[in-house]
Length: 246
Image (cartoon, rainbow, N blue to C red; front, side):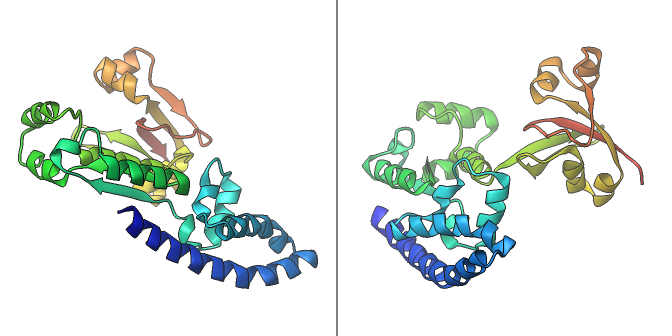
């Protein structure tokens, strides 16, 4: 599996290298001529080019990257700047600990700035037919504490810098996905653009408080419900109720 993955990665890096080498010539000329946009983009292009010339993917630049640099990197449209998740399908006996092949993939992924998840498709097919209680009992016999699908979803969210907040009503509870760092009005806009446009405030309860106290009413009585304004940065698991003008 490592050889196959490395072949694909090499082809992508060569495509990025060819693209950057052609584009950077003009950007360097413009930057030397005091073009502000070119001067802003050039350092990221140089950093990506240096990595690619060394046989490394551009996604390594994602580690600790600022929001502005991320915007610039995404604007370069490099194939190897996208986050990568390797999902290793193994036999049931290897699902809990992995094996020599998965460890080789993990080492390769670490060098590439990628992530790895080990699952067993056979186990996933089995648990899909079980009740929640039967599922946990079955997984425990295999040394697992959750289905592999959960790990894949969680790793995907982390790679894509996504979080979840909840809205809770008398008829339904819904989960909404936003990018990490999103502010309350942006989160409201995921539900409807009118919510973002007319945002006033958001009643917010932390997930742990909501669960520990048993719901919205008890959380309010305990003083755990707070009103947050336009600058509030949404936290993973927040329970939110938006107030807005139409």
